[in-house]
Image (cartoon, rainbow, N blue to C red; front, top):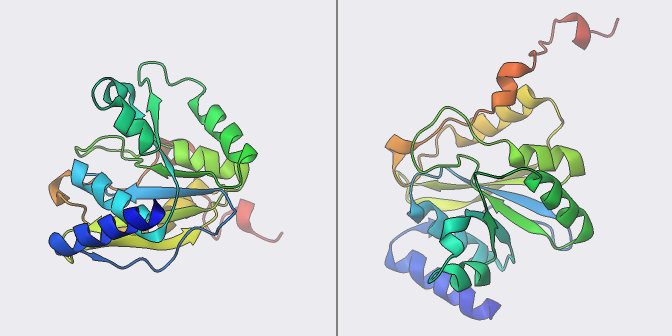
Length: 207
């Protein structure tokens, strides 16, 4: 089945004249989180699906529960979907943390923009899971201007939300998504709540 998916992905990239140029891949036998961004249209998700299929990654992803009803439900689950009731999201992160800790092959694809339209913040679930478990985060992207997509870099969040998100912003600064006008700048609400520690602040000195 993996060979079939790989062939489908390669054919799709060729037909639509996109280049898959991943420079990293999740380590086998280790849980991982894949970020799919910018998430500006359904095509961004399809591109991420193609990336995972060509790299042979068996993954899970989150989707609003309405997509798991008839007739799309069976297909969404077969693709690895996990339904989410956005009106009752309580405990979701905790459940995903437990699933990741129990399964060394757990790979979760997350689209943290949370919407295909432009917004102010990314959703922080991926960051909370990563910092609670130590699971590395791989940044995947779609860039219409260069017609390239792929997985570009892997890092392990430190817990310093400003420093970590500066790293994420730097990676995505030249990535546009399929519909650039709907792109959301990588930023978490937690950044507005947590004080930023500068290099010359008392908290960061050796004294």
